[in-house]
Image (cartoon, rainbow, N blue to C red; front, top):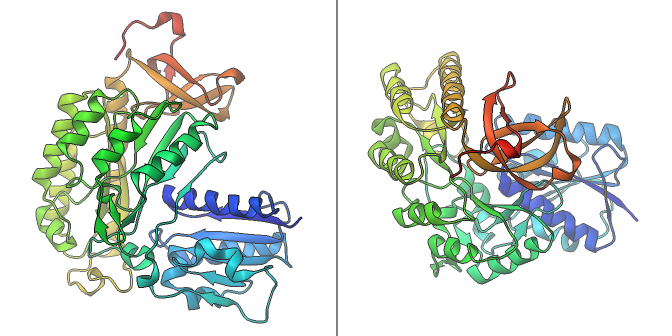
Length: 439
């Protein structure tokens, strides 16, 4: 029985795909092992969004060969699609598979026999037309369920359409089937993932269904306590969806909405499909219906043309907005994007300074959000995350809590009252009998 190990860089979508590919191996009699357990085969799933993707890929390959010198190393994922030849030249790499090939490892690589030169199996991204169903299982407390792939948007900074192809989706019927399979494994929370999940519904190049209808249908699936919507574009987060989530007992009050810039000038340069006024409206709608809702924001600093004044527009906009935390990205030049040709390059020192300012703001926003919810009662899904006698988990509105360790609570939901913020920035909880206010 050959041993295979997996390493995943990047997003929830990559995790869902790695998990599905790992089950393909197990179904064929391979033994899935940890990275350090001398595997015969390493599958490394890469990301193109992360900075220094090439350095990270090289480092992981180097570690793999140190652990198991005679192992077979295959590289898949977004970076593999964008730079297949470059990756194939990394010492120790045996195969590189692109977006249209990564779910066909066994068909294309056979018995994973090493050859003199690395195999490059990466067709043009236009060949990535089919949707490959994927979800994670037994990897984490929650499951990541892929419902959509690819993107038809053309943001000036982004390589994802080049790495994953055009927007395409699963069908509602197939997603429901996967959700029922997941429910049978005693998973408590499912996170819906995709490249642009609000664009769900395109099958074979034509729009056939809607994301809102998928949400309505999943809400009827028995056996899953929570559904969480991952990142969704503000122009695709409709009032219909927000209003439904506010009434749902399964879809949680947590939204992650990319902003990228609080300056309309920069939003237009980025090629985004909304202006800050629409974003502000989405936040206001959510908070009016769900005052306790958590709202996360993606923001990019240092985009070409972002002057000090335009950055302050973003800072002040975010400072005034009723949001809960930020994911801050420092702009980095990406080949084959429109942004790399733009004037007004921001010095890296200034980009880093702006990133630091927004990360400090994020911590202030998160603490304020936590403080606003102290004394209130929520349901926590506890994870196998133990530190110093404390176990941790997240409320439905994404507050990280700490509680006295109880092995019976791992992967279980428990109603708690939020008491105070500890030195680590997590919220300590009261005992159940002291619960006194409930949403």
